[in-house]
Length: 305
Image (cartoon, rainbow, N blue to C red):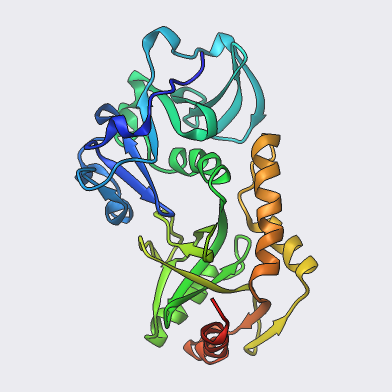
């Protein structure tokens, strides 16, 4: 039951969701009125009339609808599972009580994803919101030189610094201090998209914010990675790429359950830690942390493009 191979451009004119400079065309049946989406998504949605879609989220045919009695689970991650239905890779998303509300079957390179929703999805008025979009985008990005990093991101002076950190490291706290300093803009306070392109790595905000609720559909060239830790004093210390790679792997959404995706993301992370300067940032909860960061932006401005 493979996902259909129809070109993504078939959905030109349909609603679109844009993440990391990748435009996803959504079938009308999967996209309720934009006013129904959480506010953090609004900047990422479009009526689709201005651009073709690179990726399609389409309605799967009833003939090929997955079912639990044909699903062989390979990975169980609390509110979603990955496995196979009749030998084809499939995602099963479910409520806390275990009842499924959405199935997704990706086609080659995640260029098209066939999606089936269930009647009980009435409990979920926007079927493609988090975590569905984030999980599917892990595959989309892996095939397009990108990844999702658990981090906050700051755009200042035309460059971005991304601050990876595990839960509780202080990403939202740091974001609030950067906002209080009044310099630049926080792209996201919890998850960033990083992609490698002809001009190097670039950082994008996402609609998946943390407590600071920062979600901007904007991007900038990546100037540095700063792995954050709370400290009584502010400091920035360079670290070796090997240490940075270990830290980055711990904060990146890596699809370990799918070798074909995992083996695309891991080399990308290795490229990343050698492509930009990498640091440890210790910070106290005060806006003066910006004083430690501005020299990194100045260095980025002097590096050849």
